[in-house]
Length: 360
Image (cartoon, rainbow, N blue to C red; front, side, top):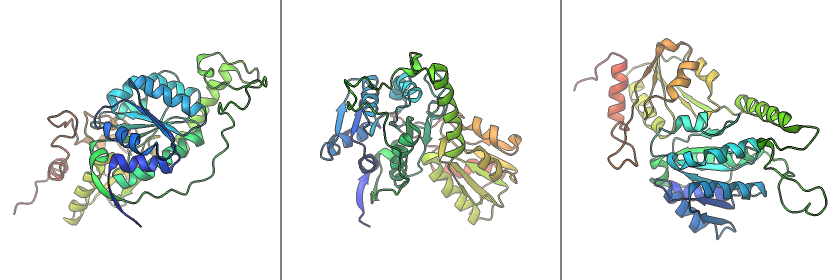
């Protein structure tokens, strides 16, 4: 193992290159800007292309073009910029064009955007939310694999901590199963043969294949996302077997919540942690099992309560669910506020347990 001190943005960039990403386009917007800068430095020497687009809309459409030609391609922004990409992300999903979107979010307020989709049509986006940079390195490679496997856009849900923190990282390639050939890609090999392909027509209802047609294509895409929902659920459960209280958290916030759970466990409280790794598909059945014995299910997220909807839907008893998170934004508006602090989280959990912290 050879560790290098890298920012999360550089580590994610190198993981993307290791995964075979050779095209990236984006528009600078903090805290995503560091990732775009890292791509601009590192992708060229690796034989790829990075474009600083004039807008997020241009960036995502350039990415779709590269992906349609068969390249492993990616784009990104923070939630505000990705809001502008939603139509194109939907088009990519409905036309089965695989690429990765890096959301270096300013907070945890993009949960609905990632899991519900802001575009049009019947589609979803596989979304992974790493809790730290080491996991982000793995998730980045996995997301390129899942995008190609399912021919669909995928999302990495990051944040300022993942983008800007420096840690020792050893970026190693993941061992993943072989993928089918991209025999659908527009690589120019069939030009002039009368058998040329197109990938950007189905969702607009212009399909001409009499064996499938627009209706058949839409049904096939819907069935594909149903299969993905069953196949790609990922989660982490810590000390839930005997827990009468289960804290549910995702992303970087889950790292802090995990520390609180460890402290409270050491103090004798029967408490556990459930972390959805895939925000979509949400690991609902696993959450139901993890909360089967719980008297309290405490949802900690840094927003007004978005994952809360999914937890209420899937918890073994929705009447046990309580919200202990909240909106917490730093003075700059670009990072987390005071709620992302272990003593504050611990106090909120203890208050939900109807207990006072021990006095020294």
